[in-house]
Image 1 (cartoon, rainbow, N blue to C red):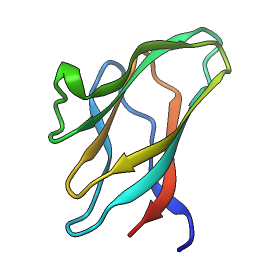
Image 2 (cartoon, rainbow, N blue to C red):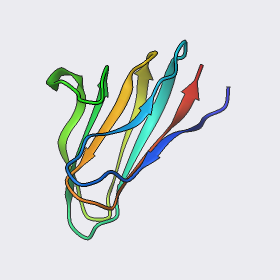
Image 3 (cartoon, one colour):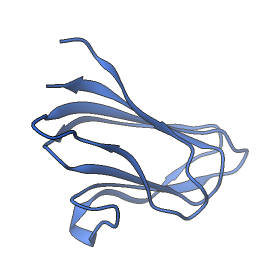
Image 4 (tube, helix red, strand yellow):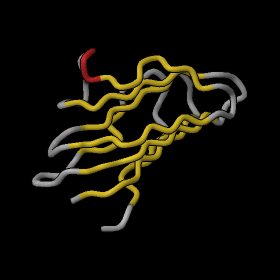
Length: 103
């Protein structure tokens, strides 16, 4: 099975945004790349959640700082049916890309 793009977004400032939802009867293994295109540091959050509003126990990154023009990569994300990858950034111009295998 080939790797493919699962989701791309540049979320609004301080807003939870669902980047990807695993389709019914599927699972996925993915890599998340986050690119800060700003000239100042930003903080980001990432959750694997049952809903679009994560609970505290669903976060895998919380207020992690990405330096100006920096990148954060998070790999080996194992996702099951109906799980959501929910993202958040403290500024605009932060690019999120999720790619992987969906089976």
